[in-house]
Length: 96
Image 1 (tube, rainbow, N blue to C red):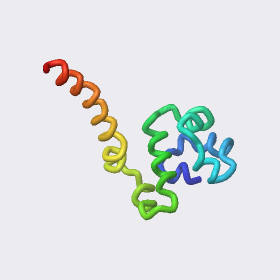
Image 2: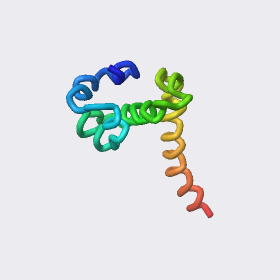
Image 3: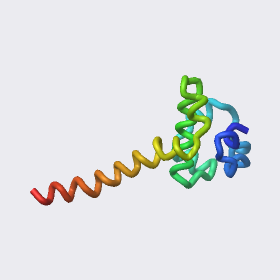
């Protein structure tokens, strides 16, 4: 199953139960992925969503590899930057 191929094998059973076709998975919201597939880890949801976005695109081969370098660049770095902005920006503004 495709979910297993992208490294999310923990969700194969729920995927087989809930996913009827590819279009359903493409239209699934993050809330659907959490509720119906039991994907509570936000990084796993993001990984699945990014892989779904890559379907049919030039980046399909690269995104389906989803190694730790890719996950760091696409998921963790943006999350870290947002966190740093939320912490540092108020501090810099309060010093003015």
